[in-house]
Length: 461
Image (cartoon, rainbow, N blue to C red; front, top):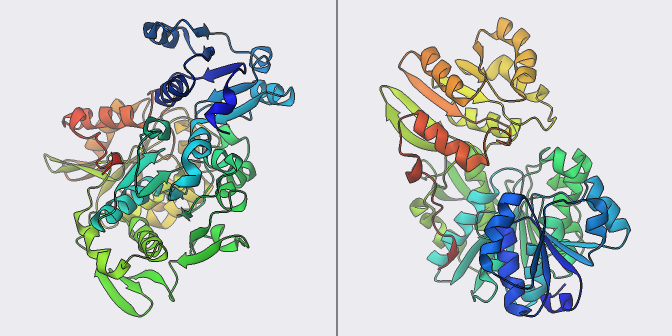
Protein backbone atom coordinates (compact mmCIF):
# COMPACT_ATOMS: atom_id res chain seq x y z
CA UNK A 1 0.00 0.00 0.00
CA UNK A 2 1.28 3.45 -0.94
CA UNK A 3 0.74 6.40 1.38
CA UNK A 4 -1.23 8.19 -1.33
CA UNK A 5 -3.83 5.42 -1.10
CA UNK A 6 -4.68 6.61 2.41
CA UNK A 7 -5.85 10.01 1.21
CA UNK A 8 -9.46 10.73 2.11
CA UNK A 9 -9.82 7.54 4.17
CA UNK A 10 -10.48 7.24 7.90
CA UNK A 11 -6.96 6.54 9.24
CA UNK A 12 -5.59 5.93 12.74
CA UNK A 13 -2.08 5.50 14.10
CA UNK A 14 -2.04 2.90 16.87
CA UNK A 15 0.87 3.54 19.22
CA UNK A 16 3.03 6.61 19.80
CA UNK A 17 6.52 5.19 20.23
CA UNK A 18 9.30 5.87 17.77
CA UNK A 19 7.60 3.85 15.01
CA UNK A 20 4.32 5.66 15.60
CA UNK A 21 5.97 9.07 15.43
CA UNK A 22 7.83 8.06 12.26
CA UNK A 23 4.52 7.03 10.68
CA UNK A 24 2.92 10.34 11.65
CA UNK A 25 5.65 12.47 10.08
CA UNK A 26 5.71 10.34 6.93
CA UNK A 27 1.95 10.59 6.47
CA UNK A 28 1.81 14.26 7.29
CA UNK A 29 4.55 15.07 4.77
CA UNK A 30 2.83 13.12 1.99
CA UNK A 31 -0.74 14.01 3.03
CA UNK A 32 -0.73 17.47 4.64
CA UNK A 33 -4.54 17.78 4.57
CA UNK A 34 -5.30 14.27 5.90
CA UNK A 35 -7.16 13.96 9.21
CA UNK A 36 -5.51 11.43 11.51
CA UNK A 37 -6.38 9.83 14.84
CA UNK A 38 -3.78 8.64 17.32
CA UNK A 39 -4.75 5.68 19.50
CA UNK A 40 -2.46 5.79 22.51
CA UNK A 41 -2.17 6.23 26.27
CA UNK A 42 -3.05 9.47 28.06
CA UNK A 43 0.62 10.22 28.64
CA UNK A 44 1.41 9.66 24.96
CA UNK A 45 -1.47 11.88 23.88
CA UNK A 46 -0.11 14.70 26.05
CA UNK A 47 3.17 14.40 24.16
CA UNK A 48 1.51 14.26 20.72
CA UNK A 49 -0.66 17.33 21.45
CA UNK A 50 2.54 19.39 21.51
CA UNK A 51 2.53 19.06 17.71
CA UNK A 52 -0.43 21.48 17.63
CA UNK A 53 -1.76 19.74 14.53
CA UNK A 54 -5.41 20.81 13.99
CA UNK A 55 -6.05 17.71 11.86
CA UNK A 56 -4.95 15.37 14.66
CA UNK A 57 -7.37 13.81 17.15
CA UNK A 58 -6.75 11.42 20.01
CA UNK A 59 -8.39 8.39 21.56
CA UNK A 60 -7.03 6.76 24.70
CA UNK A 61 -9.73 4.08 24.88
CA UNK A 62 -9.06 1.43 22.26
CA UNK A 63 -11.87 -1.08 21.66
CA UNK A 64 -12.78 -3.43 18.85
CA UNK A 65 -15.63 -1.13 17.88
CA UNK A 66 -13.33 1.88 17.76
CA UNK A 67 -10.77 0.05 15.64
CA UNK A 68 -13.53 -1.13 13.31
CA UNK A 69 -14.56 2.48 12.69
CA UNK A 70 -11.34 3.11 10.75
CA UNK A 71 -10.59 2.15 7.17
CA UNK A 72 -6.86 1.75 7.87
CA UNK A 73 -4.91 1.44 11.13
CA UNK A 74 -1.15 1.98 10.96
CA UNK A 75 0.01 0.03 13.98
CA UNK A 76 3.33 -0.04 15.82
CA UNK A 77 5.21 -3.37 15.59
CA UNK A 78 4.71 -4.32 19.22
CA UNK A 79 0.92 -4.41 18.82
CA UNK A 80 -0.25 -7.84 17.75
CA UNK A 81 -2.82 -8.20 14.95
CA UNK A 82 -3.90 -11.48 16.57
CA UNK A 83 -5.42 -9.87 19.66
CA UNK A 84 -9.18 -10.07 19.95
CA UNK A 85 -9.79 -6.36 19.29
CA UNK A 86 -7.70 -6.29 16.14
CA UNK A 87 -9.11 -9.59 14.93
CA UNK A 88 -12.71 -8.38 15.28
CA UNK A 89 -11.92 -5.09 13.53
CA UNK A 90 -10.16 -6.90 10.68
CA UNK A 91 -13.21 -9.13 10.22
CA UNK A 92 -15.28 -5.97 9.85
CA UNK A 93 -13.01 -4.65 7.13
CA UNK A 94 -10.33 -2.58 8.88
CA UNK A 95 -6.94 -2.87 7.21
CA UNK A 96 -3.95 -3.12 9.57
CA UNK A 97 -0.52 -2.18 8.25
CA UNK A 98 2.85 -1.38 9.81
CA UNK A 99 5.38 1.28 8.99
CA UNK A 100 7.60 -1.32 7.34
CA UNK A 101 4.81 -2.22 4.94
CA UNK A 102 4.20 1.45 4.12
CA UNK A 103 7.90 1.98 3.37
CA UNK A 104 8.02 -1.03 1.07
CA UNK A 105 4.89 0.16 -0.72
CA UNK A 106 6.41 3.60 -1.15
CA UNK A 107 10.07 2.84 -1.84
CA UNK A 108 10.67 -0.90 -2.03
CA UNK A 109 10.25 -1.39 -5.77
CA UNK A 110 13.06 1.05 -6.59
CA UNK A 111 15.54 0.09 -3.86
CA UNK A 112 17.97 -2.80 -3.45
CA UNK A 113 16.49 -4.24 -0.26
CA UNK A 114 18.47 -6.77 1.77
CA UNK A 115 16.21 -8.12 4.52
CA UNK A 116 17.68 -9.92 7.51
CA UNK A 117 15.65 -11.95 9.99
CA UNK A 118 16.02 -14.83 12.43
CA UNK A 119 15.29 -15.58 16.05
CA UNK A 120 18.84 -14.92 17.21
CA UNK A 121 21.67 -12.90 15.73
CA UNK A 122 19.70 -10.81 13.23
CA UNK A 123 20.81 -7.43 14.60
CA UNK A 124 24.51 -8.28 14.62
CA UNK A 125 24.17 -9.90 11.19
CA UNK A 126 22.43 -6.80 9.79
CA UNK A 127 25.01 -4.42 11.24
CA UNK A 128 27.86 -6.62 10.03
CA UNK A 129 26.42 -6.79 6.51
CA UNK A 130 26.10 -3.00 6.40
CA UNK A 131 29.67 -2.66 7.70
CA UNK A 132 31.02 -4.94 4.98
CA UNK A 133 29.05 -3.22 2.21
CA UNK A 134 30.41 0.15 3.31
CA UNK A 135 33.91 -1.36 3.27
CA UNK A 136 33.17 -2.26 -0.37
CA UNK A 137 32.46 1.40 -1.09
CA UNK A 138 28.68 1.18 -1.18
CA UNK A 139 26.41 3.88 0.29
CA UNK A 140 24.43 1.69 2.65
CA UNK A 141 21.37 2.19 4.84
CA UNK A 142 21.02 0.24 8.10
CA UNK A 143 17.51 0.46 9.50
CA UNK A 144 14.45 -1.44 10.70
CA UNK A 145 14.05 -3.37 13.91
CA UNK A 146 17.67 -2.65 14.85
CA UNK A 147 16.64 0.78 16.13
CA UNK A 148 15.79 3.10 13.23
CA UNK A 149 12.29 2.97 11.67
CA UNK A 150 12.38 2.78 7.90
CA UNK A 151 9.87 5.61 7.63
CA UNK A 152 12.43 7.98 9.16
CA UNK A 153 14.43 7.45 5.97
CA UNK A 154 11.48 7.68 3.61
CA UNK A 155 13.09 10.27 1.33
CA UNK A 156 16.71 9.15 1.70
CA UNK A 157 18.75 7.41 -0.99
CA UNK A 158 21.21 4.54 -0.67
CA UNK A 159 22.87 1.97 -2.92
CA UNK A 160 21.88 -0.84 -0.57
CA UNK A 161 19.19 -1.05 2.11
CA UNK A 162 20.04 -3.46 4.93
CA UNK A 163 16.79 -3.95 6.83
CA UNK A 164 16.53 -5.94 10.02
CA UNK A 165 13.06 -7.45 10.44
CA UNK A 166 11.52 -8.91 13.56
CA UNK A 167 8.75 -11.49 13.37
CA UNK A 168 6.41 -8.53 13.97
CA UNK A 169 7.47 -7.02 10.63
CA UNK A 170 8.15 -9.86 8.20
CA UNK A 171 4.51 -10.27 7.26
CA UNK A 172 4.31 -6.53 6.56
CA UNK A 173 6.85 -7.06 3.81
CA UNK A 174 4.98 -10.10 2.52
CA UNK A 175 1.70 -8.20 2.40
CA UNK A 176 3.23 -5.14 0.73
CA UNK A 177 3.40 -7.01 -2.57
CA UNK A 178 6.99 -5.85 -3.14
CA UNK A 179 9.64 -8.53 -3.57
CA UNK A 180 12.85 -7.92 -1.58
CA UNK A 181 16.07 -8.09 -3.55
CA UNK A 182 17.50 -10.60 -1.06
CA UNK A 183 16.46 -12.11 2.25
CA UNK A 184 18.80 -13.74 4.77
CA UNK A 185 17.72 -15.91 7.72
CA UNK A 186 19.98 -16.93 10.60
CA UNK A 187 17.81 -19.43 12.52
CA UNK A 188 14.28 -20.14 13.75
CA UNK A 189 13.47 -20.98 17.39
CA UNK A 190 10.25 -20.56 19.42
CA UNK A 191 9.85 -16.88 20.32
CA UNK A 192 7.24 -14.15 20.93
CA UNK A 193 4.46 -16.68 21.47
CA UNK A 194 2.36 -14.12 23.35
CA UNK A 195 2.33 -11.83 20.28
CA UNK A 196 1.81 -14.53 17.64
CA UNK A 197 -0.49 -16.75 19.69
CA UNK A 198 1.27 -20.03 18.90
CA UNK A 199 4.64 -21.40 17.90
CA UNK A 200 3.35 -22.35 14.46
CA UNK A 201 2.03 -18.84 13.84
CA UNK A 202 5.41 -17.42 14.84
CA UNK A 203 7.19 -19.71 12.37
CA UNK A 204 4.66 -18.94 9.63
CA UNK A 205 5.00 -15.18 10.17
CA UNK A 206 8.78 -15.37 10.23
CA UNK A 207 8.97 -17.48 7.09
CA UNK A 208 6.44 -15.33 5.24
CA UNK A 209 9.42 -13.16 4.28
CA UNK A 210 10.48 -16.09 2.10
CA UNK A 211 7.33 -18.03 1.31
CA UNK A 212 5.04 -15.07 0.53
CA UNK A 213 7.31 -12.09 -0.12
CA UNK A 214 9.25 -14.30 -2.58
CA UNK A 215 12.63 -12.51 -2.50
CA UNK A 216 14.64 -12.61 -5.70
CA UNK A 217 17.47 -14.25 -3.74
CA UNK A 218 17.55 -16.08 -0.40
CA UNK A 219 20.55 -16.86 1.82
CA UNK A 220 19.64 -19.58 4.32
CA UNK A 221 21.38 -21.34 7.20
CA UNK A 222 21.71 -25.00 6.24
CA UNK A 223 22.40 -25.86 9.87
CA UNK A 224 18.95 -24.78 11.06
CA UNK A 225 16.36 -27.55 11.15
CA UNK A 226 13.47 -25.28 10.13
CA UNK A 227 15.24 -23.31 7.42
CA UNK A 228 16.87 -26.40 5.94
CA UNK A 229 13.40 -27.70 5.01
CA UNK A 230 12.40 -24.63 3.01
CA UNK A 231 11.66 -25.00 -0.69
CA UNK A 232 11.42 -21.63 -2.47
CA UNK A 233 10.70 -22.12 -6.17
CA UNK A 234 10.41 -18.36 -6.83
CA UNK A 235 13.79 -17.44 -5.31
CA UNK A 236 17.43 -18.16 -6.13
CA UNK A 237 18.45 -19.98 -2.96
CA UNK A 238 21.98 -20.38 -1.62
CA UNK A 239 23.03 -21.99 1.67
CA UNK A 240 25.66 -21.24 4.30
CA UNK A 241 27.02 -23.29 7.22
CA UNK A 242 27.60 -26.43 5.17
CA UNK A 243 30.84 -27.93 3.88
CA UNK A 244 30.43 -26.99 0.24
CA UNK A 245 29.96 -23.27 0.88
CA UNK A 246 30.77 -20.68 3.52
CA UNK A 247 31.21 -22.44 6.87
CA UNK A 248 33.29 -22.53 10.01
CA UNK A 249 35.75 -25.25 10.99
CA UNK A 250 37.21 -24.74 14.40
CA UNK A 251 38.52 -21.18 14.52
CA UNK A 252 38.54 -20.62 10.76
CA UNK A 253 36.01 -19.52 8.14
CA UNK A 254 36.16 -21.56 4.94
CA UNK A 255 34.72 -21.10 1.47
CA UNK A 256 34.43 -24.72 0.43
CA UNK A 257 37.96 -26.07 0.94
CA UNK A 258 39.60 -22.63 0.93
CA UNK A 259 40.64 -21.30 4.34
CA UNK A 260 39.66 -17.62 4.34
CA UNK A 261 39.70 -16.08 7.81
CA UNK A 262 40.93 -16.75 11.36
CA UNK A 263 38.03 -15.82 13.65
CA UNK A 264 39.93 -15.70 16.92
CA UNK A 265 40.58 -11.96 16.73
CA UNK A 266 37.11 -11.03 15.51
CA UNK A 267 34.82 -8.91 17.72
CA UNK A 268 32.09 -11.53 17.31
CA UNK A 269 31.57 -13.50 20.54
CA UNK A 270 30.05 -16.93 20.15
CA UNK A 271 30.01 -19.61 17.48
CA UNK A 272 26.56 -18.49 16.37
CA UNK A 273 27.80 -14.99 15.48
CA UNK A 274 30.73 -16.41 13.52
CA UNK A 275 28.36 -18.79 11.76
CA UNK A 276 26.22 -15.80 10.83
CA UNK A 277 29.33 -14.13 9.39
CA UNK A 278 29.23 -16.97 6.88
CA UNK A 279 25.72 -15.79 5.95
CA UNK A 280 27.01 -12.25 5.47
CA UNK A 281 29.86 -13.43 3.26
CA UNK A 282 27.46 -15.54 1.21
CA UNK A 283 25.17 -12.54 0.81
CA UNK A 284 28.05 -10.40 -0.42
CA UNK A 285 28.94 -13.12 -2.91
CA UNK A 286 25.35 -13.37 -4.14
CA UNK A 287 25.31 -9.61 -4.67
CA UNK A 288 28.39 -9.84 -6.87
CA UNK A 289 31.07 -8.64 -4.45
CA UNK A 290 34.46 -10.24 -3.76
CA UNK A 291 33.50 -11.82 -0.44
CA UNK A 292 36.89 -13.43 0.13
CA UNK A 293 38.59 -10.10 -0.43
CA UNK A 294 36.21 -8.31 1.93
CA UNK A 295 36.24 -10.92 4.71
CA UNK A 296 39.05 -9.30 6.70
CA UNK A 297 36.92 -6.17 7.23
CA UNK A 298 35.02 -8.15 9.87
CA UNK A 299 37.99 -7.39 12.13
CA UNK A 300 37.01 -3.70 12.31
CA UNK A 301 33.34 -4.33 13.11
CA UNK A 302 32.05 -2.61 16.24
CA UNK A 303 29.92 -5.01 18.36
CA UNK A 304 26.39 -4.02 19.29
CA UNK A 305 25.31 -3.17 22.84
CA UNK A 306 23.25 -5.59 24.95
CA UNK A 307 24.45 -8.56 22.89
CA UNK A 308 27.09 -10.52 24.81
CA UNK A 309 28.58 -7.11 25.59
CA UNK A 310 31.58 -7.27 27.91
CA UNK A 311 31.20 -4.20 30.11
CA UNK A 312 34.49 -4.67 31.94
CA UNK A 313 36.00 -6.18 35.08
CA UNK A 314 35.64 -4.92 38.63
CA UNK A 315 37.33 -6.60 41.60
CA UNK A 316 37.96 -9.82 39.70
CA UNK A 317 34.45 -10.13 38.27
CA UNK A 318 33.71 -9.63 34.57
CA UNK A 319 30.26 -8.26 33.76
CA UNK A 320 28.59 -9.35 30.53
CA UNK A 321 25.40 -7.71 29.29
CA UNK A 322 23.29 -9.96 27.04
CA UNK A 323 20.02 -8.22 27.91
CA UNK A 324 18.60 -8.75 24.42
CA UNK A 325 18.47 -12.50 25.15
CA UNK A 326 14.76 -13.35 25.20
CA UNK A 327 14.73 -17.12 24.62
CA UNK A 328 16.25 -20.10 26.47
CA UNK A 329 18.20 -20.90 23.27
CA UNK A 330 19.86 -17.49 23.49
CA UNK A 331 20.87 -18.14 27.10
CA UNK A 332 22.42 -21.47 26.10
CA UNK A 333 24.37 -19.80 23.29
CA UNK A 334 25.65 -17.20 25.77
CA UNK A 335 26.84 -19.91 28.15
CA UNK A 336 28.75 -21.57 25.32
CA UNK A 337 30.73 -18.37 24.79
CA UNK A 338 32.04 -18.56 28.36
CA UNK A 339 32.50 -22.33 28.58
CA UNK A 340 35.35 -23.14 30.94
CA UNK A 341 34.87 -19.92 32.94
CA UNK A 342 33.33 -19.61 36.39
CA UNK A 343 29.94 -18.13 35.50
CA UNK A 344 26.93 -16.92 37.45
CA UNK A 345 24.03 -16.81 35.00
CA UNK A 346 21.02 -14.52 35.55
CA UNK A 347 17.83 -15.83 33.91
CA UNK A 348 14.17 -14.91 33.95
CA UNK A 349 11.82 -12.02 33.20
CA UNK A 350 8.44 -11.64 31.56
CA UNK A 351 6.71 -15.00 31.23
CA UNK A 352 5.56 -15.72 27.66
CA UNK A 353 5.06 -19.40 28.29
CA UNK A 354 8.19 -20.58 26.48
CA UNK A 355 9.32 -24.13 27.23
CA UNK A 356 12.54 -24.24 29.28
CA UNK A 357 12.79 -28.04 29.23
CA UNK A 358 15.61 -28.14 26.69
CA UNK A 359 17.53 -25.58 28.73
CA UNK A 360 17.06 -27.69 31.84
CA UNK A 361 18.29 -30.82 30.07
CA UNK A 362 21.38 -28.94 28.90
CA UNK A 363 22.14 -27.99 32.51
CA UNK A 364 22.74 -31.66 33.32
CA UNK A 365 26.06 -31.45 31.46
CA UNK A 366 26.65 -27.75 30.66
CA UNK A 367 25.66 -25.98 33.85
CA UNK A 368 27.57 -22.87 34.98
CA UNK A 369 28.86 -22.36 38.50
CA UNK A 370 25.57 -20.74 39.57
CA UNK A 371 22.15 -19.91 38.12
CA UNK A 372 20.07 -17.12 39.64
CA UNK A 373 16.41 -17.03 38.63
CA UNK A 374 14.38 -13.81 38.72
CA UNK A 375 11.33 -12.10 37.28
CA UNK A 376 7.82 -13.33 36.60
CA UNK A 377 8.90 -16.69 35.17
CA UNK A 378 11.76 -17.09 37.65
CA UNK A 379 9.82 -19.42 39.97
CA UNK A 380 8.82 -21.65 37.04
CA UNK A 381 12.43 -21.90 35.84
CA UNK A 382 13.62 -22.49 39.41
CA UNK A 383 11.14 -25.34 39.89
CA UNK A 384 12.36 -26.97 36.66
CA UNK A 385 16.02 -26.68 37.64
CA UNK A 386 15.73 -27.71 41.31
CA UNK A 387 15.96 -31.50 40.76
CA UNK A 388 18.71 -30.99 38.16
CA UNK A 389 20.72 -28.90 40.63
CA UNK A 390 20.82 -31.81 43.07
CA UNK A 391 22.17 -34.09 40.33
CA UNK A 392 24.60 -31.69 38.64
CA UNK A 393 25.91 -29.72 41.59
CA UNK A 394 25.57 -26.12 40.40
CA UNK A 395 24.26 -23.44 42.74
CA UNK A 396 20.61 -22.53 42.17
CA UNK A 397 19.45 -19.28 43.77
CA UNK A 398 16.22 -17.27 43.55
CA UNK A 399 15.92 -13.49 43.41
CA UNK A 400 12.92 -11.19 43.26
CA UNK A 401 14.53 -8.69 40.89
CA UNK A 402 17.71 -7.77 39.03
CA UNK A 403 19.45 -5.93 41.93
CA UNK A 404 19.00 -8.93 44.21
CA UNK A 405 20.08 -11.30 41.43
CA UNK A 406 23.33 -9.41 40.82
CA UNK A 407 24.08 -9.34 44.54
CA UNK A 408 23.55 -13.11 44.76
CA UNK A 409 25.72 -13.64 41.69
CA UNK A 410 28.62 -11.66 43.16
CA UNK A 411 28.37 -13.60 46.41
CA UNK A 412 28.26 -16.94 44.57
CA UNK A 413 31.38 -16.10 42.56
CA UNK A 414 33.37 -14.93 45.58
CA UNK A 415 35.28 -12.22 43.68
CA UNK A 416 36.26 -14.32 40.67
CA UNK A 417 34.38 -15.14 37.49
CA UNK A 418 31.70 -13.81 35.15
CA UNK A 419 28.31 -12.33 35.97
CA UNK A 420 26.31 -13.06 32.81
CA UNK A 421 22.95 -11.41 32.27
CA UNK A 422 21.36 -13.55 29.57
CA UNK A 423 17.79 -13.73 30.85
CA UNK A 424 16.13 -15.75 28.09
CA UNK A 425 13.00 -13.65 28.63
CA UNK A 426 11.73 -10.15 27.78
CA UNK A 427 11.94 -7.29 30.23
CA UNK A 428 8.27 -6.26 30.17
CA UNK A 429 6.81 -5.44 33.55
CA UNK A 430 10.06 -4.66 35.31
CA UNK A 431 11.55 -2.50 32.53
CA UNK A 432 10.38 -0.59 29.48
CA UNK A 433 12.62 -2.69 27.21
CA UNK A 434 15.83 -4.69 27.08
CA UNK A 435 17.89 -1.50 26.68
CA UNK A 436 16.71 -0.10 30.01
CA UNK A 437 17.31 -3.49 31.63
CA UNK A 438 20.85 -3.56 30.21
CA UNK A 439 21.56 -0.05 31.46
CA UNK A 440 20.38 -0.99 34.96
CA UNK A 441 22.60 -4.07 34.90
CA UNK A 442 25.57 -1.91 33.89
CA UNK A 443 24.86 0.49 36.72
CA UNK A 444 24.62 -2.39 39.22
CA UNK A 445 28.03 -3.57 37.99
CA UNK A 446 29.56 -0.15 38.55
CA UNK A 447 29.65 1.00 34.91
CA UNK A 448 28.31 4.15 33.26
CA UNK A 449 24.94 3.04 31.85
CA UNK A 450 24.83 5.81 29.25
CA UNK A 451 28.04 4.68 27.56
CA UNK A 452 26.81 1.21 26.56
CA UNK A 453 23.72 1.91 24.48
CA UNK A 454 24.77 3.45 21.16
CA UNK A 455 24.48 1.28 18.04
CA UNK A 456 27.19 2.23 15.59
CA UNK A 457 26.29 2.54 11.93
CA UNK A 458 22.56 3.25 12.02
CA UNK A 459 21.27 5.30 9.13
CA UNK A 460 23.06 5.89 5.84
CA UNK A 461 26.80 5.97 5.34
